[in-house]
Length: 415
Image (cartoon, rainbow, N blue to C red; front, side):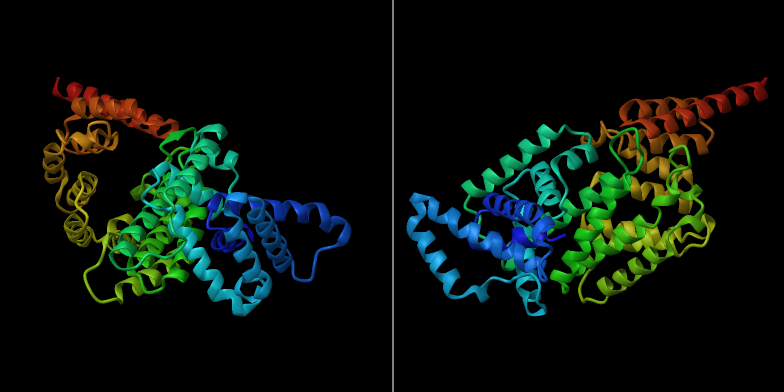
């Protein structure tokens, strides 16, 4: 619980996120060794911070090439211990918030690869071990460890300042932060590979990070939009699979299993995001789409024309082929599968979607609805061959077989 705050405060002292993590781990290990015999201190967080600070001073003094800097930092810390928060007093909340925000921006710096940002964020801010991150993303512990080491080395070599960026740089870096948090959530919501369709722990980690970020930058509507989106989508996790782990599509889910508390929290976050002046950003718009589903008591009550309008706005705000594919689904629900099929066919040659399994999956669904069963079976089988998630593959194969059986039935009726 204290690890992210320790690392954040120590990074401000030593200006090296790798060293800061090592010092925090040293302090935590010292606590594990000493507290069973000496007892837990009255102010455990302050004990951890004090131990880590002293180790930071010693570490800096041992680095002969930085002797002068070490002496200056050590002298400053010894003369004015109050400049570094002890993690226990209410008056330190602002300083801790500043340090955490700085650490968020460091972990998600654009100089790092997306994989590096995700690994470092989950390690330093999510508190996950390398083996836990590896299991979550079905990557070996050694691979995750290498990503984290490379990320720390890259930050050190690039001399990234431990500060919150300003102006246009703030907006660019904030977009990177939000991208990382949502990427983690999406991997939990719909796993790209493996034997599980959902990984709720990753969704919870992303939600926690999003809520912390909303507290740190309360005047950023896109932050509240992302939190709203994750809260509302997270409300469906229990309904997304049956007891065997088989995926259940959105419109087939038992809505009584949706978490009303998360929905209420999401709608409140959305209302706050929409209260800011100016055009809505992509996360706010996606949250508004999710809210349309959350507000509908049944699938038939879904306001599909409004969802189409929101996707129109999203396509203007953040154009992408995936947005257009999702918009095609909304159009099909609002105006019929033939209209959706026309839009999907226009995306068939889009290079970025050639390996995207949901393109043939959506097309197969539309073909099924317009009675072109043989083509539907082929498209759904192709989608199944492209996904690396086992439950999703099984579902697509099941739907492909159903389309094939419908084609045979149609042929029998013709005879």
